[in-house]
Image (tube, rainbow, N blue to C red; front, side, top):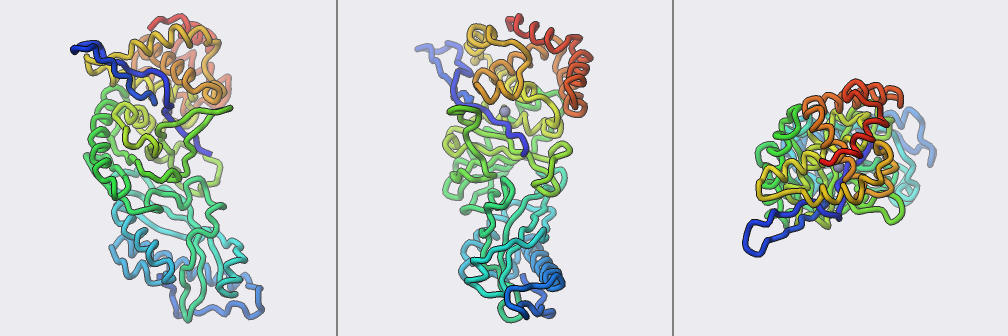
Length: 433
Ligand SMILES: [Zn+2]
């Protein structure tokens, strides 16, 4: 399970400096195919029993069909895409095709991973019916550094000399967290491109897409200003009505938990269920549907910092990952002389610093998100001031690669800050900002 980097709702983030008549105090939302046909397989010679050879043959035939569907997407051949689709699925598959065409795939292929048992479909459609879990491996032009992978479940039945797609949702519950829940898997979408940012909204909300694209450009500039390691600004922001996109759960933590306004969802190549043994190869920002209309630069800066650092978020502790995102967000707010985060500073000094006993752990984030984000920010702001952004980034990168044990963690902190974890926590606690 990959980590999900979110930004919480509630609390105080930024307050306008009293400057205009009425001393405007604006509290920003702190958020915070076709089958080959020519090689018919003798399936069902014995009812209900399919030999391994028959399974291998139909797997090969479905792979050919899938390759034809992928090719149809890349070429814009809607008729080709729909050639092996049951009439009942044509509406949904047409929408899928139109959506996929809007994303700009530089690479796309689908292949069968394994067969799955779906007796209800066999009952309904006959013995020559089967279901496969398949992989969709793709790369979006201008967005993905390398291919990423997600999964789908397709059911086929034999009609005449071809396999026909009869269901695309029968094994959804067996798929990975974002399997069959990609932005193109729901209603019709609108895609807005601005510089290297790609914003996805529901087609009916295209104006929102344009607005978010504008905020995104400003957010990209802010991240580039404050994160010293460089970032090309290529990112997808998904702000759809559908809460299941990328399978997000919008609350986290223990007890009642807390609500997440948006998150950077990490992407990997290979089997989605395998243990992740390396840094992610990309990420998408997904906005909580409840807050999509109020998606602003402030929120986007936090999430985009996660995207800018995603290849370095492997073993980096949560406090530094969230801390850097908050550090960049707050620094970006104060780029505008009319805005300050002083009220947030006061809140941290008064309410949270006295409770700090050690460098934060994931348990702190599960327990009280607001406190954890605030202290993570403070810890990072301390480091940025004491060792500077460049060395902070070097510490971040070192932890991402080498933080394999508590001893390694201590050694890396000592190397970059000159302090043990306990001494560093004490210094952060005593720092007044
Ligand atoms: Zn975050």
